[in-house]
Image 1 (cartoon, one colour):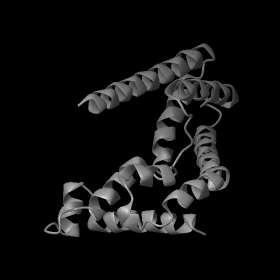
Image 2: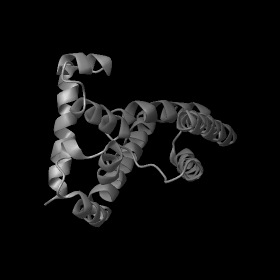
Image 3: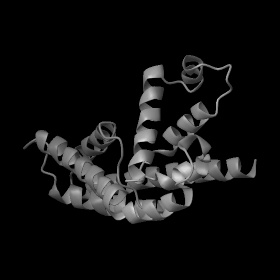
Amino acid sequence: MKLRTKRKIKHCIAWLLGIITILVALVISYFFDKLIETIITIILFYIYRCLFEKQWHANSMLGCFFVTSIVLIIIINIEVKITISILFSAILTFILTLISYYVKDYFDDKLLVNNYKNKLEKYNTKCIENLTEDEMAKLMPGIRYETIHIVYGYLHRPKTLNSTGYAYRCNISERTLFRYVKQIKEKYESLGK
């Protein structure tokens, strides 16, 4: 119960900081006379984020707040008026989300390889089914925790529950479930190479 309460509090703080970040960006954009452009950028950012499986995030909520605020201030300064080009805001936002994806990918695949290998040495005698959920999350930080949670639950589901029923319980399709399982298994296998 205590862990659940901490997660709820952390989730509420994250939402609050997100709202504050957006409000700060809107206030700054108002003073730069680029309010409409900034609103379009923010909306497109959330739409474009869905196109990529991951995005870079700071290690702390406060760090994320500051980095996001700085990036938005830079974007507000770079944007051109909507009367000149609405396409510019769309392209600029897409480039921002693309850069965020590649930064996250770089940190996941390049800088953390040594960390993965060190952790893998500890668990290398285990098959993926014998890992705990925490071990899976530590070994594969580049994969969303929700995905790991679903796969872990699938690997340890009751024998009476088939994959269709499990996918239904998780509110995902069976195809998505198998894609998640494949992703986790391939990532775990690649750590040993």
